[in-house]
Image 1 (cartoon, rainbow, N blue to C red):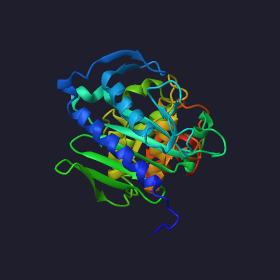
Image 2: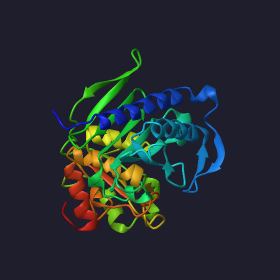
Image 3: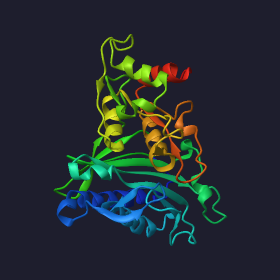
Image 4: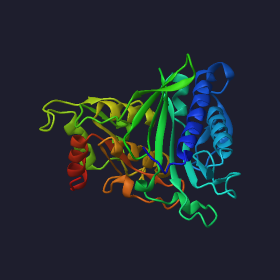
Length: 318
């Protein structure tokens, strides 16, 4: 299908899937290996780092850093970019990842996951640099996430639809279980942390109140579902439709989630499935990060609910 393909992208996606397998096993055995506690370190965001976060981070850094495809890595758990052995050997890609999203919930058996996105280096004639990560979301080569729960899934897009693989533990391999996922045109579920109500502006509160009432769009109240693990809430929204919201508020005027390795890859996935993802006034795939740990608002979901949100809260049409 792709006569000019070198197989390099396929190879690096296989490397990522291997990391997902290793982290999946780590999550499943965290309880009796004593990985639920804190490591004693604080990351660049001011969050205490859990032991399992550090373990997952080290797995991906070691595995991807030795793949010869990535010149630089960015991890949520590291302050700075990470140079690899491929940086001087022409590694033409850079990757940013959240090694274990939702790790604070792991002791409660709530799903966790890994999120990643891959960019091409902007100038192969020059050395890789942090600027290679400062590219708009539509420049992403491939992005994806895993969910570690009742099953281990691996969802990714390389710009030609969204595909879902499920880990078959009997053979230790990912098996294609859904090709070309399409988000429903509309849903009946909203997902948001209503504990932040006191910090929202009046228009955001009015939109949530409308979702919970007998509104003109749905003619019945929406169902509220919020896990508190980004990959779990996003994965449900992708498959069942509706809307996931983590907007700006008076406490977090720049948003809560990380733009580069949480918002952009998931926005890329949602747009590839036929939905929308915005930070409020902009589609996220058009946003260019200015630093590797930049924060952002994130609202994503089905076309019907996303258009309704944009008109109601920000006065524009998607």
